[in-house]
Length: 344
Image (tube, rainbow, N blue to C red; front, side):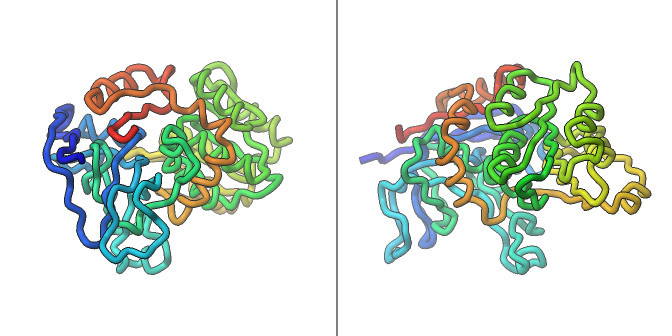
């Protein structure tokens, strides 16, 4: 029987330490999960380098993770059993603020996220509120770990109200842009994806994008004009956070259309106020996910053929700093980096 557990602690910007100690003792409302895989994303890179606005040190990072239930609370009668594979919804709202009372804890004013404000998955074991577990039976760990970014892409698609037959533009083909592409195609939308990295555009095409645009060599506005017959797309999903592309999304979107900004940046964006009223567009933000986890697991299961290629690199728990540095230095090679933990 296991008596110790490893964890990777970010002590300060660009300072990580692998330590070993006791297995976490769950509270009465928590399950103990043996972690199998942890996906790294841009937020992890920014916590690591100290530029994430919500970073708390010291911290065990990792908000995208899958594992096996090791222990459940006494008297638990819910759907999970010891030995089940689960993914974890890392987000928890306060339940009291305005967005929480409207069923939108993803933008809670006091939201807590595992791996950001609370200890996350870069460990052999983690204690998790049992109501944040989502069943992932039938999915291998290397696919199940993609459920969290797919849920974020699904939420962006839901925010945009994307429907069958819509022409949609996605700017940015990182994991979230690819997830939004996959979810939009699954709805029957016709999707154009723009990026500057060839491998990401290839992944977008495999996800079902009808048209991909290399913005290093093609004019995006001209390509969108041709793709939409001059009317503009019904929805633009902006998944980079680059201010110029947010501005361009407002230019590109059809009159009466919707721009969904899921990319993250602290930079300012200059917009012509008249465009918002003249075109009567919806300009929406999209943050995390809000109830999409079960649908995300289902989408991962149904489109396993596509998602199997999204994990491009795997490192061990003792290699997390190396994994982050590699991903930051090689954006043209990396789609999703995954950390392999104890429960293989």
